[in-house]
Length: 177
Image (cartoon, rainbow, N blue to C red; front, side):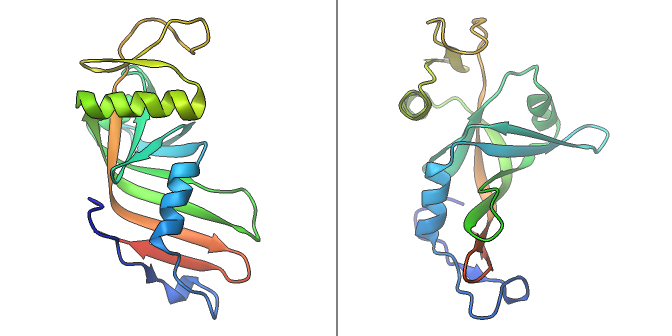
């Protein structure tokens, strides 16, 4: 979903309460930009699901995340790049959950990686250095896994985004390219 124009929200009335209105694109973007953690869902070779919490950054219409090549999620994505990233709240009566469906693709565009590394530093105090293959942990004694291995950065361009809002009304809104 290249976000050159604002995607049109489509309220799903069968899964929304009477009087509900569609969630705005601005609310969805605010949720994606403000989320502290996402859950990445991939599929193992034998068809079993794999879900893992991780930070992700919304930039230029894509959600970006980092993982080691030896990790289960990276092995799953190498075989099948289709995945889902979700974020939201654990409260039942209020909040907004957002689900992003798409395909994970390696990002090796150095200017994009530089911006993303700065986002990780600013938002999470997580220092990454950029190299030709992705990120490397900045060796400062604070970063997790400072083993020097290059970590691939994946970007997910949405095929579909679902927003589930709760409050006075419950609403399911769909956004497609």
